[in-house]
Image 1 (cartoon, rainbow over the protein chains, first blue to last red):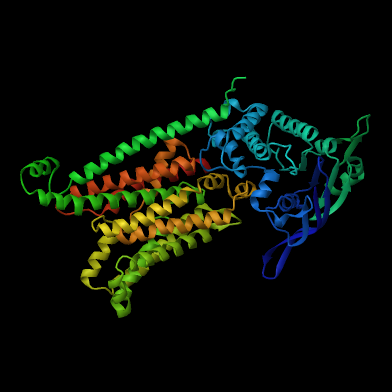
Image 2 (image 1 turned 90 degrees about the horizontal axis):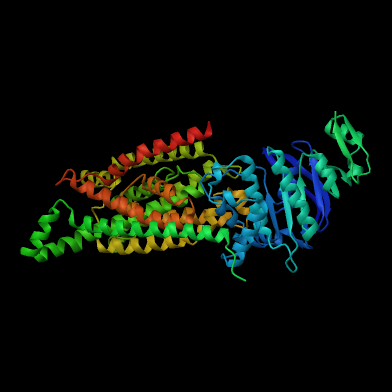
Length: 263
Length: 354
């Protein structure tokens, strides 16, 4: 689905001085998988998401999306294949929740009855009915993120399209959300992956969620990929101490994934 | 199976109905303003002109209405409409309700162009002959170039890491306006008394010079550019989520941003060459409409054009009647209305940020 070969990204910080933010990363993301990207603040996780989703162009390396170089996609073609849920989206004008959801249909052209059906489906599944006519800036943080998640879904729906597999990128989507909204969004995502083989790429601080749901995990440190593998391979007491400087106890129960308790 | 009610569609239709109602009200207001603008003027009161129309001098009345009042009203509609619509679009581009062609250098850029042009006319015979053969095109073209240049400059200065810094935008506008003021002050001292008077009066705004050729030219430019700008309403809405999100939605943001700046200069530049600097229309009108309609560009742009026209023609009626037979510059009226508004918007932002 997504293949990145030797991607690097650096920015100029002064005369002749460059700072490398992403440093020679290879990765492979399978269709219908959930991939987790973890690491400490400033490790280059968000930049990696921006590169993989085509927002910024890497200074080196190639990204193949379904076998085709990502730079060969038009911005609209790309918008039909992937959507991105960012951390926080400030909106200066009082657009209504419905306006925001309908924006998700922008790449699909003029609004038809089909588009409204799709938007209604999302409204139903996220329980946004009562908020529809509310102005976005007056919502609480949790409600806003729910609406933006809805918009990201509106953009990708319908999930089952011929010759068009879809990817959802989530860049720390849950920071500062209360537990119920967090769980609801995460549950919906797992459902979509199971049902439609949606491909999901997560940047998340909640390591236990990553351990439970992600089939592949990339751990970044200072722009480099320090570790990759399954949750049992990545989440060991030694690794967590080395890369996160936390003392952890790992419970190995009958579950298929490790459970971490941070001391 | 009966068609299930689609909540999203039902609400969308409700929004459209509200837009349509507002549109109709504005249209009626517009027609009323046109009638008022034609009949109210220093040469004759309303009653007086009807009386005279029935009694004698029908040709004089016809002359007054057709060649003075009507062009003036139409110029007011085009200027007010264009400024308000450009203001609404610029506010989305700058992601802030405080943007306006007057504040971000587009108007003073046009002023710069016009004054440079006037100066060139005086100095270089070639320009003089050029101006005489194309009187409608020389100054407006320079005004467009000046508007584009300063507007783009302010935009570039206030852009930092892909985001518009509001404080920088306002300060860059102040700097650019101060520069334009100093530059025109410098050139103005080199002009003769008559030119000085006309430039000074022009720079404060007036619909006094309305003629049919000017109306034709401006109709073409303002209506053409406005319709083209309107065709970007969906992209503008997406830009209200910020540039990053718009890109994720598949909007070619670079193209949209450039188009909005260029079209705003096409609308405001030549217009300023004819009516002078008229501030705050683009600030006040979209703001009032957003309270009623919400910020969706499809309805906001159209209604801004209508209400902008109404606002400017009404301001002109005040400008030409309060100190009759003399006339107030119309820019003074719009500023008197606009500055308290601007202050109010600033205070509102302050509250939100703190």
